[in-house]
Length: 138
Image (cartoon, rainbow, N blue to C red; front, side, top):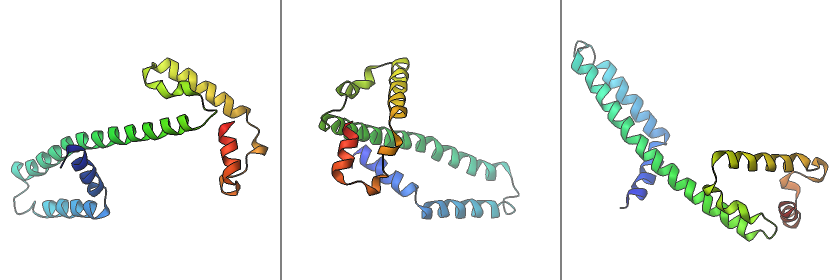
């Protein structure tokens, strides 16, 4: 199994309610065992060490999953931009711009959005595919 597949599998399972419930049960067992261990340093060290290790590993898992999802979204958006005839092709390579240039472009697109006439934009569920496509190509 590839690392990316493993990360995706683990991220999917880590986000389930049953995984959260297992974590709560484990913490409850640990807390309940406190009197048996007389709340000593070893008892505290068990939960501190295990949670630190899990957190440390989850940071890398989450980062890998987010990087992969981000790359997938970028490819899909690039394809949508490429497939739309009137789309601005220059936005396909925004990764090369610095933050100031990206912020400037964002302001330009916000200005374009505020110039749109809200009366001509019906809610998406009422638009036919042709009308929605025409609005996107404007």
